Image (tube, rainbow, N blue to C red; front, side, top):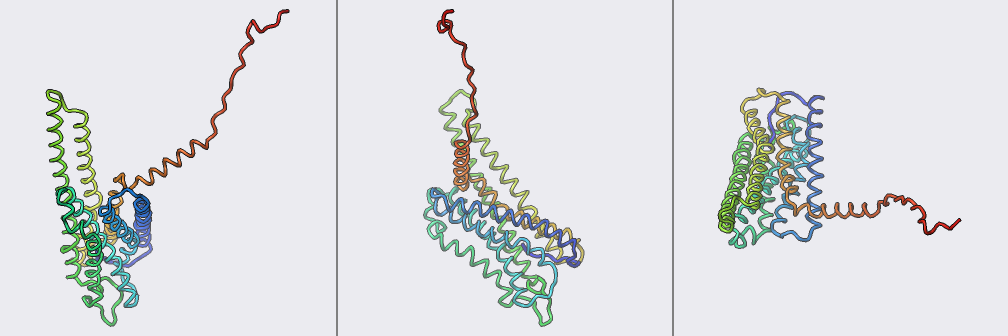
Length: 332
């Protein structure tokens, strides 16, 4: 998440706002990513290339969750030294750039797998998985280190501020050259995947109707239509709930750069925390919605529940003593 220009100083209310917005989101993102990562690592039935791309994304999202509480503080000036100031600004920026690069790679790999299933193994994304993962980590690092390499406005008497670390041209290049195009590319690839799924669904329905001629829609057709509708609804919800706040925060940052001291500081803080956190939640939603990635934990939960049922004592049963039979009564 690119920092924004905010008027005002970091008072007590601003610190509390940052703590209560970024803190719980950061803890949730870290724990959820660890949950999915261990579930994938301890499972032995997952495909190699797809799980490798998604594991790399989860690690990048984990680092983004660690950096999330530090991003709002990039808006305020302080008296840090040269090396400390560059590290506290460049490292969170790199973590989010790497997160978006890995998320873009996951979408691209899925798009190729579904759109070109017969030729997927010939693409370099599948054949050179380590090289692709290396690019998703090194290219964001090179871009994030441009201020360290000399593209900055640091002076002999400068205070630690993002305005001294990131020039305006660098921020514009990052927002409109990488962040916004990456989000649009992921939206385009998701739309294409849905189109392919819709076309395959129509072919399946034609086959089913040829088998069941003269009958209404079968139960299988209704289930497939419902599943496709759920996919469309979930992707739309992810875009509205996760990416719209992030894009709104990016545009507010541009307005704040152009019009100094024209935007309320609390508005900027809320958009920064919520926008960055909502974007970092996307891999968690994708991981939890995939049954393969959570199969290990569901098996563990099933074993624990089965063990608890075995250990629970069975309730006592009371048997009433039947009255003695007349033939068993001794004669008087």
